[in-house]
Image (cartoon, rainbow, N blue to C red; front, side, top):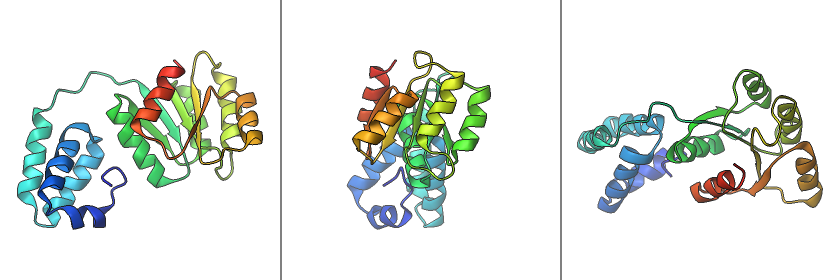
Length: 187
């Protein structure tokens, strides 16, 4: 709920003490800074200044950020899915680099090499398979793990994705645990 910035749901739960505790802890310690800032602003706007201040103080007391996080790139045409990636990858210790449009991701990949690349299968203009084929022109399978994350589970799509050069195929919906397991499996 917090990761996708579902304002109405969060605001309907905000008066519950257990939600304030669990949600506040998550925002202070594990959430991406942009997500935390988004909700701090929303809480203040809705009259929950005390809660916002408590979260802000707890975030300030959390362990300092490491100097540099490895980059993790995610490409998906769904903004909601990209918000989930942003928070989960950050929680896993990565600096998320997100693209809604595969062409922009390919341009970025010409200049930068992430530690891992996640891509959707079905996207407009450039499919995930085409993205993988083009990314493989820059980075071999051993150098850059590419994980296709999709709702599709058709043998034909899976075979095409593997032939294009993906290291692994992961089903949506995904969790921090499933992303972490896929990353570890394909290092």
